[in-house]
Amino acid sequence: MCQLLGMNCNVPTDIIFSFTGFATRGGRTDHHSDGWGIAFFEGAGVRHFVDYQAAIDSPIADLIKRYPIKSRNVIAHIRKATQGQIALENCHPFVRELWGRYWVFAHNGDLKDFSPELNGAFRCVGSTDSELAFCYLLQELRRRFGDTPPALEALTEALRELTAQIARHGTFNMMLSDGTALFVHCSTSLHYIVRQYPFSTAKLSDEDMLVDFAEVTTPKDRVAVIVTSPLTTNETWTGFLPGELKVFVDGAPL
Amino acid sequence: MCQLLGMNCNVPTDIIFSFTGFATRGGRTDHHSDGWGIAFFEGAGVRHFVDYQAAIDSPIADLIKRYPIKSRNVIAHIRKATQGQIALENCHPFVRELWGRYWVFAHNGDLKDFSPELNGAFRCVGSTDSELAFCYLLQELRRRFGDTPPALEALTEALRELTAQIARHGTFNMMLSDGTALFVHCSTSLHYIVRQYPFSTAKLSDEDMLVDFAEVTTPKDRVAVIVTSPLTTNETWTGFLPGELKVFVDGAPL
Image 1 (cartoon, each protein chain N blue to C red):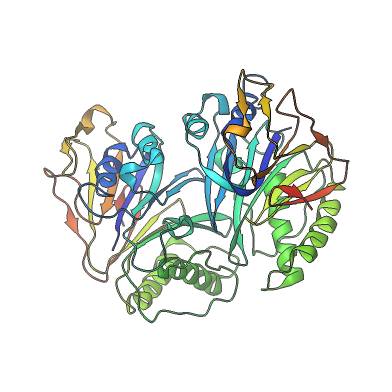
Image 2: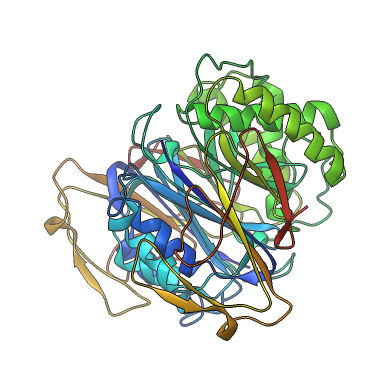
């Protein structure tokens, strides 16, 4: 199994604090050492970093921990391989284009007897059930809505149906973003927190690191962080219910 | 206008030497400071780095200059904006998936009155003529060959026709790779060199840097480097002819 980290904010925010704790699980405080990846939206563009080294040993992960890339939507993943060999093409998150927007996807779980027919519009490059689920999701969105992207409400409803359908094949904790919203589906384990004014201090559980968010934010900032298991020891995280799909926009769940 | 750098090899090779000289043109020895990018194939996967900062100031470019990522096909680009604002989504190279492979594309030049109809299979995220040309190329390849990727010869023939057609709209120096071959079309300025046994020493023209390739290669290695203007002062580079399309496989032009 793998672990997921997502961030959705109302202003571009860096993810250094959360990623530092999360990346430590990629080989040190946990055993997810079969690759990792992170994607940041910046406007319509995406910065996409993947590596088949453990996050704890990766020079690129080291850069991410030091270089404050500011983004309103981020998805990160550390991998413990279940299906698909350890190779760059099997590292999450995956990126594709639909409706003139990039879509970013990452998955934690394992799907059994999942072999939907792909019509060729989106095909897998690697050999994971996860990339197959992503290609299927985008194909079905395009099939339903054609060439015109739907409003958020209709898109959410479609994703609610599609994720429930995929989740019948196994564990399907997933994060998906088109740069405007972050869609999160939980099968087994996901937690979130919304940080907003008045900000306080947070302490990582995986690293000896403390940050006073009041010092690095303005009163208008709002940031939602979503993760497989809580990243901090002194904050209250909210667990997702099994089967739940939440949509985060501007730093809060709708 | 922009500058292009490509590398095609018979064994995975790092591009640190060439990229160091090339990146210096992104703001120091030349004025291409409106962003940069580089994509490395590793197996079927792609590492894709883009930045709207000048290459000379970018912490990510700095990492690439220090971290030996080994690849058989690399495409890099430094940008001097002509069409499209300075934004991440307008930085080359661009990446899309077709036939279950990633395709990487970068362009130097400027296309006028170029507005082909896109059928929706590949749409632009940004606002450059370059990304439009890339989407059009992939759309037309899929239209010609359907869901089955053609053999290299047929693919080359199709690209020869399509690039010639696009080049009627202006300057179209471009590099395209699916990870197995590197396709290079020249309108105005591109040069290449094939380095193979016996290897010798090369000296960068843009930086005070010298490398003895005999020390870092084996006798079987073969590396083709293709670039807008020659990177070294003591080697013989071959210029492309205007309108020429060359295909590089295993470190040499076919």
